[in-house]
Image 1 (cartoon, one colour):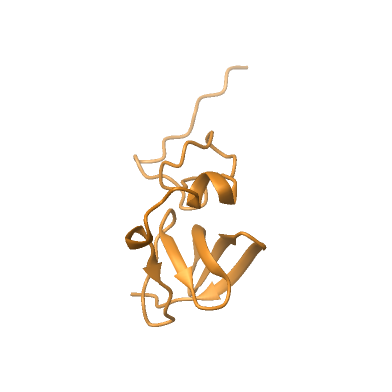
Image 2 (cartoon, rainbow, N blue to C red):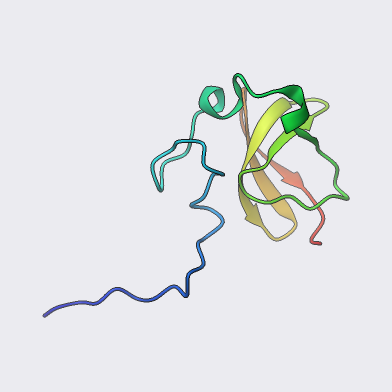
Length: 92
């Protein structure tokens, strides 16, 4: 029995994209690969009143520099040097 691939309509899941940081599809980048050697102006200050997309580089006042890995409603998962954290953000 042959199975066919289901069409996705050209959209990709926000959890499978990491902003082109050289990671294989489905594999998370390391903090060092995502953040090291990036200029300070590449990082957006985190604020709960801003909306973030997967792949965005952010700076957090406590956790430092990080990469948004996924977006789930009003929460984002961010990879920081000390590990992953879930943070709030705006829905729009």
